[in-house]
Length: 162
Image (cartoon, rainbow, N blue to C red; front, side, top):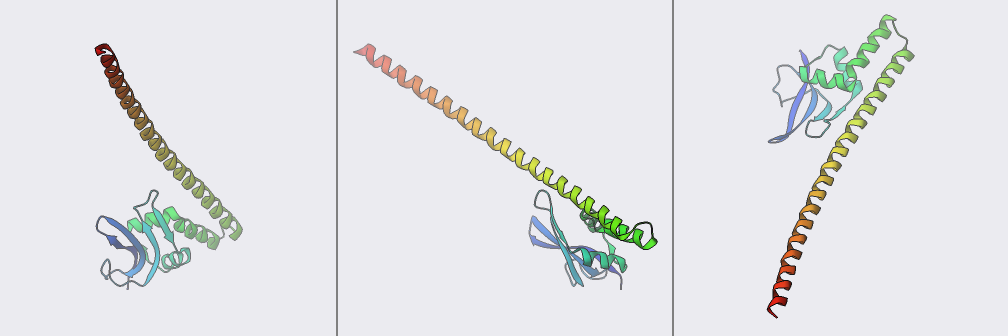
């Protein structure tokens, strides 16, 4: 039985989210699966990914083949890096501590990049919000000036009649 790590679609029309599952390659896309490894939600910015590291590492080490999309997701989450470092430890190129240190450093860098992206998105939203507020203020000021001009004309014309 060939095992694939692949995405299983859920959600409504036009708003999908996916389970990352280990499934027999012959089963249907949304059919039976052996184990749920994680969740991938592309609807958020940045995309939300939750992966059970131990399960993903175990399945790949036991020969499961990830699809291209799942391989990309696992790579971005660091699962493939962890496997690579574990192979280096097995070959004697690294010690367990060095591998763990490299992996933790990579995780910290990833968290910093993610925080910077979230901050950038929030700053962009705040800037757009402030631009909308400024445009509304300018429009309100223009309306007020027009209203004052009309009332002053009416007042001057009524004083001329008297």
